[in-house]
Amino acid sequence: MSSIRKPAVAGTFYPREKVQLQSEIKLILDLAKNDINIPKRVFGIIVPHAGYVYSGKTAAAAYNLIKDKNISTVIILSPSHREYFPGICVFNGDAYETPLGTVKINEEIRSKLLENSKSIFAGTNGHKSEHAIEVHIPFLQMVLGEFTIVPITIGDQSKNYLDELAEKLSEVSDGGILILASTDLSHFYTHDEAEKLDSRIEKYIEDYDPDGLQKALEEGKCEACGGGAVVALLKAAKKENFKNVKILSRTNSGDITGDFSEVVGYLSAVVY
Image (cartoon, rainbow, N blue to C red; front, top):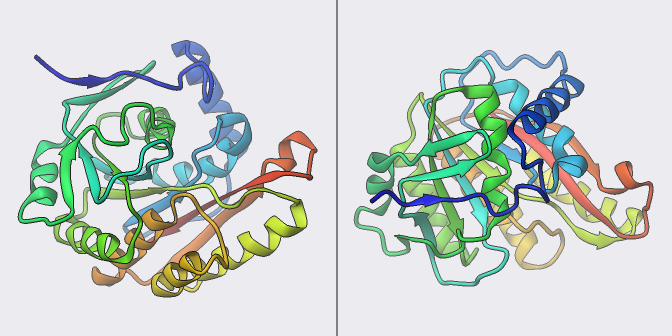
């Protein structure tokens, strides 16, 4: 029997009905169109994972860039918001399902990531109700068509785990693979406080400084729930000699709600 991870946040983070979901994503992608041209191979993207009404346009700035790229597999790196566990968990099932259909797991890449690993294992830890993977898949279904995924939850964002994950990502990387780091930025600060924290993490990303980012996150100088995913992506990209990082958009929830007393920060970027 196949093991399919069913949608957990359809109807809350994004529309439950297929036609409405397609229409909303198309509108968001159209609103986020820009003249940025990334002619070379895209190694990875950093994308926020809030409800589409809040962070969808920021996310779409990255998704618009991969429309015409030759991408057959997306490795999605996600924090585990609801469950702590040591190590890093690759989903052990056959597919993830959204209202737009099912997307199969790339079993070959999963096996390569698991091979001789001390920290990476197959299971459902962090996957059962995690939104930070699920919300990206409908966007990917709209811009890529046919593709496979490797969904990964990071249960512990300590340096030793992230270093091994980066090494493994470097080993499996090839021209048809995109690595997606799923993260929001600071949570529930005033706009001015959030701006200080989020501008710091933006600078570390823009400077292509994963070690500095790791240290700053550990010391509380900036905040990102998926900061470890970003660190792993940037470290893997450096190992593969990708030279460029470009910030595409940075916003916060107050830009949508008009309430700047407690905001959540969002950022999208591309590594190429």
